[in-house]
Image (cartoon, rainbow, N blue to C red; front, side, top):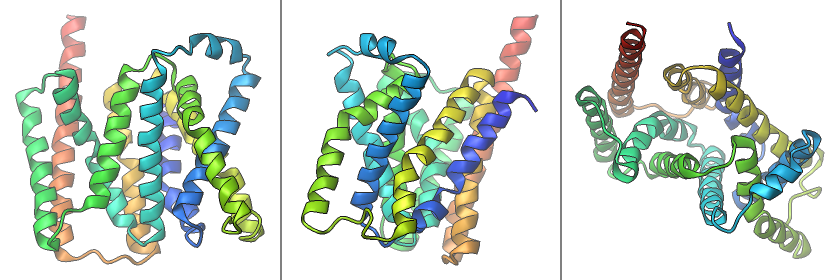
Length: 294
């Protein structure tokens, strides 16, 4: 197994086990946990950049032109983190996994709408199937699976911002968290001052988990960046299903969340759509490589 694949498996496996970490913080306000995640992530990442001797290059790369893009990215990833943390704490791990299952197809649609990317004819079928799966889940429950959709679209739009942003993954994440660092820190200070803060008051273990949340956030992102540079995009696309699969299994078997027959049907439609989409992408890439070799 090469380094890129190992790093990719490590990143997606760690993301898959995130529900266990954040479930341990379910007694703390998700707004506070999200703010801690922003603050500690920024502090850890800026330390990583400093250790790598890249502070000067990062500073020189920051211009007023790119700041709005990274502010938008920071707000979107904050919405995604907050929604995920709330969903885990409220006992909706299965639905959060659905959000990350359908995210790749949402990203494809966003690429078509905003970047005018072209879909091959065989790619339209799984996109339509996934939409049908979501519609079935909505009809069977009487409402849209809004938690999954917020996660899928916030992360999809975040990916769109990253697509047009000029900085590397590490430097970009520093700037994203840096643009919202002040607001997150001010919120935490305010909560502590009025006596509603959880840092220290929540006890030794929750306090330690809050302090380590930046490291926990950054490590899989750094592994992902390593993987993205060393493996084909089609391989990375297949690896990404590791994360929601683990989350789904945790929700059903560890936390005993219900998985009703209508969910089996809805999830099944979406899973088949993902299999078709992944297989088509893999075969298309292989044909492209063979054509270039010829």
